[in-house]
Structures are given as structure tokens and as C-alpha cells.
Amino acid sequence: MRAGQRSELVQIQRPADGQDDLGQPTVGWATVRPVWANILHRSGIEAIRADAPASIVQASVRIPWPAADGVTTAMRVLCADGTAYGIKAILPDRVKRQFVDLVCETGASDG
Image (cartoon, rainbow, N blue to C red; front, side, top):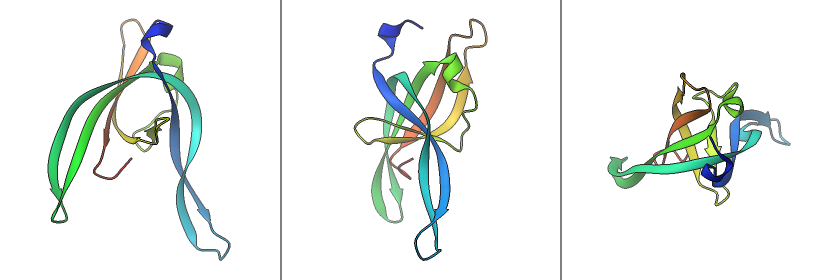
């Protein structure tokens, strides 16, 4: 995967649970690593969620093979513009081992 094919610096994040000042549980995200990626939007789907229309955008986020080490479907991809994509599947290039495609979705649960 040539450098010119990676157009956006994104953050691979994992869920990070913690506690607030009162000891109450909080749910947040912690960055695992920044990585250059190529994002291709596959489709936009209108769906009904809790009686309100919601836009769901599906995307393929291509990252270099080594950067995908340890990435799971529990993680998300956060773009520089603040868009969060939940990782739905991980599709490695098993022949050349140059890249991994992360099948992602945003809109339904916002990553």
C-alpha cells in the first residue's frame, strides 16, 4: 500500500471504562494508535430507529497490515473531523499482507 493511497490520519480507539469524581462508572474511548488510512464510503442507508429516521453510512477503512495488529470489532475509527465509525468486520489481505480493510458503520450508534 503506497503512502499516496492513505489520505487521512485517523485514530484507532478502544472502549475505556473508568470512574468519575463521585465513583460512578463512565464509558469513554482511549486511542490505541494513530494510523494513515484510505476511507471509501460504500452506501448511505435510511433506517428507522426508535420511531425517528437515522442515517447509517457504511465505509471501508483501509489501513496498513502492521497497524491492524490487535484491532477488534469492539473498537472504532475516529476521523479528524470527529466522525466515529464502529468496526463491524476486519478483512485482511491474506495474499500480499499489505493492508487490512475495516468494514465500518456510523450513524446508528455513532461508533
